[in-house]
Image (tube, rainbow, N blue to C red; front, side, top):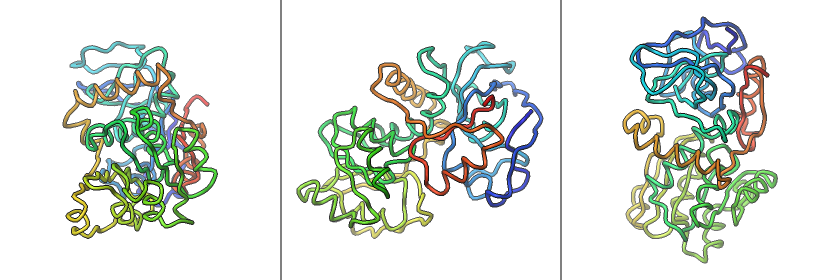
Length: 326
């Protein structure tokens, strides 16, 4: 089958389209004919051997994908061939077919398209887990989103806005900030031109943000901690800036704030029922229109390298999709 294989770990420009054997489901798995697969920042890392997971070679990247079930493992119950589903498997989605454990497969309502589903799973489930679970978000709070124009960032803007919160979006260009305002952000900060801490303090009358979503890392994490309110919650999701920050512990003490890690993949594996409940709420939000995953671009398998590069260079506003039938 056509795929975008990683035959050896290395820089993005060393990979290209090719062929892989069609997947065969294990007893607890299903195989899905992929209609759309989301592109995530970790896809750029996994092919370089720089992610927490190093799959056996060869493999294709692509952890989230939507499509129809084409075969089912012997021990799987509750699914049927031809069923529309959404799935997560850390890798494998940039291909015509991909497999996933049945516990990591979600039934897809007819009202939600494959593109919407593939654009939503990782980004919206990560943001939902961060805000509602780890962050204990409450209506009326102020939420600061770093990297707000990316997939997780825009999802966090929409979810926080839908929860009745005031959203401050931090991004690197005026165009990205406009996309954040369109998604529901009340305030925009260009953190390449403004001092992040001072801008947040000014926007909140000196109080600071109650909750921070951080997908950027680097020097911005400490600035965001310094910009939190008393009892603030800083939720660390990723390090798109490249550097893993070291935060002075005295800041947490003085502000009475929390610094929490958000690892949605592990949440899905360890607490599948709670995760399924959250994904169901997200799909319901897409159905009723309160959530709308923005799609930046669609690429065929032959163009997957272009999508990875665009994401790595942080040029995307919204989600990039790999569509094998494109």
